[in-house]
Structures are given as structure tokens and as C-alpha cells.
Image (cartoon, rainbow, N blue to C red):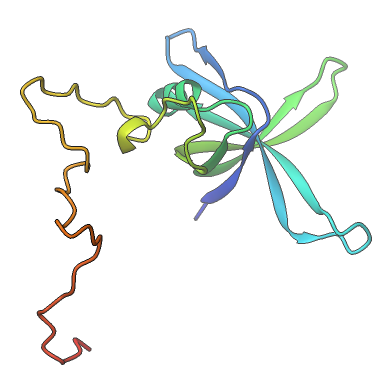
Length: 160
């Protein structure tokens, strides 16, 4: 059997991080996911609001680096839960259990979640003895100021 889902949308609220009685982190949030088609009458896309639950390190990651309005890509599985409401009625809910959560948009000004291209992972402290390279480790541009260089190794054959 296969139960795999990928969704991409914006968080409708900040993730809520809780812990189980045994201390396991669990985060819940909701994604607003636009449908691929537009309504013929209004010309607008309908939006689905999908509940997502993340566990352990994924829960801590999403609660630390995501907030309301951020675009997220969630990979996981669909789970259907049966429950009883306060009046004793039988209810059913669908939610996505997240295996992986990825950033779906670029860095916004003031956010520190992917400084230096690390995308949410702590960056290593800079070595005090390392020389400063304003070109990010790619060396300086050519002396004539041209950002591009001609390739001279063309043998005229195609690899396919």
C-alpha cells in the first residue's frame, strides 16, 4: 500500500509546539493550499486549509523556523482520525503527518532562518584566522572586470 502526500502552501498560524507526557515534541499547524484550477464564475482559485502534525526533530524545526504566512512544502502521509465531539457525536478529521518540511519561499528581510545559505541549520563559527573573502569562496573576478570567461576546451563533439 502507498500513502504519500506532498503539499505546498502558507502557514495560517504559527506552529504550536507541545510535548507528550513522555516529553516527545509535537507541532501542529495548518497550511492554506490553493487549488490548481479557477472557479468559472469568479475567476478565483479555491483554497483548502489542511491540518499538519509534525513529530520529534521535525516538530522542533518547524516551530523554530516557520511562522504565520511562510510558504512550506510538506512531505508526509494522510491520516484519518475518528473522534467524539462534546455532544457525543462521531466525527472524522483528515490531517497530514509530516515526514519532512522544506522552505517554500526565499528568505524574507530580517529572518535569520537561512543565513549564509544554511537553510535553518546552525552555521559554523567563522575561524578568526581565516582570511576574509568577499566573493564567498569563489575567488576574485577577472582583473579586466569581466564576470565571464571564454571556455577554450571545446573539442567539437557532443556527448550524446
